[in-house]
Length: 468
Image 1 (cartoon, one colour):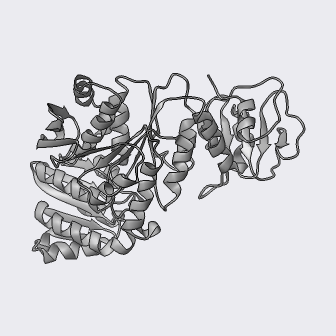
Image 2 (tube, one colour):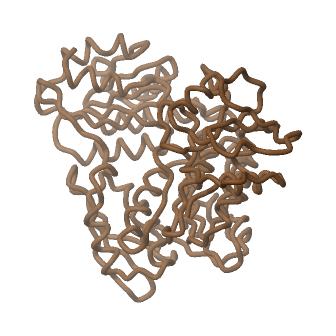
Image 3 (cartoon, helix red, strand yellow):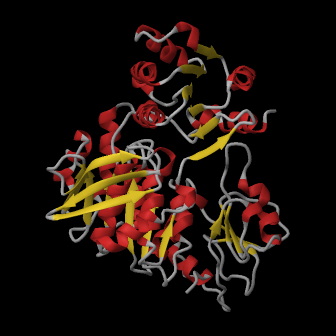
């Protein structure tokens, strides 16, 4: 079953119908990534406006385009507010008041044509890894849809839902957050049955304003659940546990505290080989392993297991699924030509995730080098966050390489904690740090590289790997 143009019109509240109804194959906002017969949505971007690429998209095989600006086009343009008929075949464009809102209306309509179990996941840290592992585990039993990459916002989540078919039995939807109200909107579109909250931290505090505002925003997922749904809450996070009264659905807790419904102990890091732990649920006790790096990954295992249990999967299924976690869910490691092991954890950074990465570094053998860049968007928690990382890094690292203006605070905190000044190096940017690292790293070094994505330290990893 595929979305059709007549269904799109119905979702937009139009009485128009195409005489010969055409199917649409998903949605896209990038004309370079179109699938044949896709719906192209023209949206303004940071650098370019999608309206400039409408004709390119239609020529490349899009069935129709949604636009909200008048354009010059070699294809028909239908003003939905004034048109009396549609072309009997494509491609063509439909002019609407707001293309993004139209995308969201279409996605919400399409979601309601099916009845998969929808799992919504949000939190300050670990939501992407939780989404990936949860989808991986339950896909051993259920045909599962998930957001690809970071398509977790008001654009990406609707685009994900346009790929829903009657074959899907479950959908795992990561829900991003900047300010209160956003997750509520995503829930109105996605209609989750199960809501998972990872934790509440200071990431995005610059926009949200405070950790309390972040907690309120995350709680919108729990408040949106139906009475026959399930709220999966982190027992160990006081901000998350405080959401319990907000849920009309039953609450299932997880954590390391034996008071949680699902809890873990005997956690053992096997370095780059993964972790093992013992999980308790009621009277059941199970030993589980997963090729996930770092002790903190036990929380990801707990969340995925909680969802799997809620969907009726047995512990045997869960054991098998966790043990066979796909390679793509693991932290990327590579080596420099000199033999140093690089741990590429450059996707993003906040105090909680950097702490977890430093804990991983502590578990590994070798001379420990922590390359830490600025953590962005912490707002009023910026100084406190960088201070805490500096103090922990002083306990773990043999050598510190700090990058960016904010990381001066990290360096100073490490020095106050007693770290050797001769082993602490600060650089203004990655370009200044690269020559030092190229010369300093050697065989036997274990090098953690971690910073907010805005510093683009992934290119530093690539340069060190290639020795360029």
